[in-house]
Length: 329
Image (tube, rainbow, N blue to C red; front, side, top):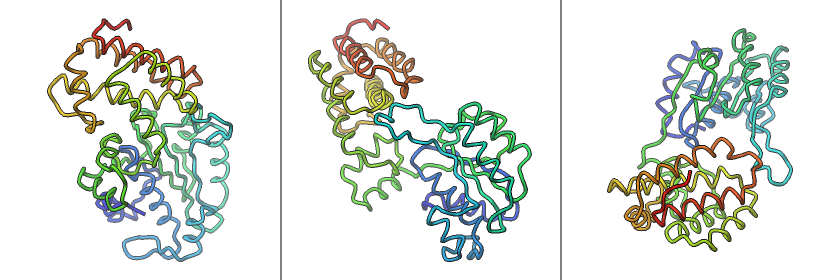
């Protein structure tokens, strides 16, 4: 399916259907429908009896196979999620072995006698070896093979890969469109969740994380050392990655920074009064130092660090900031 806010881009592609490139790169904000768009295009390319406007018919054998995730000429490269406990703390990557397997398969004849389609998402999750392996096949693609790359962070892709693709930015919905989408689905607290997810409405429901995030926000409004230690231990027991905590805290500090400038919060509008109170008693220069600390930890957000220790450290640093002390860095 294609979300209605991407219909103009779909019409742009179908208007020049016979001029398909060997590779597309669809980029834009995460959780806004890019992968759904790419899958719709893949089904349309594989459909044996396309409908008007190059829409997939939904009823031919090829469409049935695609809908059942068993089409023999459709390949996906996406990070494999480890089965072991605590996999949220693993750095998820597309690795060279997966790329090699797909490359070997597309050198063979199409099973159904038509195109073959390779979907790579998110493309920036390829490690360097995998990216270079894909680049080689993009430089000399087999006949009747189309690559569809989806990226949330296009700048992280190799420039040489980007240069081999026809690029199309898929925009996020307008705030009104995004909110209407959530309300149609009767999502509780839609406004707050949409703000937290930066206007991207296709986020996965995570009520337990929402609860822990609210507990953190209450703590950030009135931090206490014993509560900080308890929270760090409790967060660690969930086996969530440090990246999750960094995101929550980063967004809170962004709102405090906006309050320093007498501006409304972006991410936590329900806690506007609390972030404004923190801004009144804190120093913008010290805030920047704390944000810099978060930025330095960000590359390790999914590594198997001692998460409890890092959360304790960051919240203790925040406590010093809240008490209007100089940031140690």
